[in-house]
Image (cartoon, rainbow, N blue to C red; front, side, top):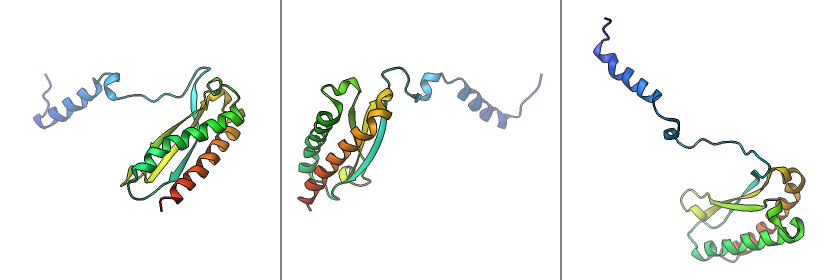
Length: 140
């Protein structure tokens, strides 16, 4: 029988234990979108807000996003934006104060992205940029 030096047994046991971890325990696996209704983030934009916490501005963001979305739908998506899967998402991006910057994503179904994305997302972001600039200007 072959003998292993005791100092090698612990690293060997740790290495083997790592191989035995079930796939689900390793964390979520990111998969590329697939299927006819798969949604993709067509474009992301970052907007700078204010440097100090401003609860009123934070509360107003939902209305600014909704108004910009509704204008884009009315002008570029027809009566039913769900047909093309048009929506948006918001993520705070500030380092010290999370809402000093936000990242907004324009999301569409993959099959409509090339045809509708540039015009629809461009219009959405133009509307949102104007609304955010106006809201921020009144707070500085």
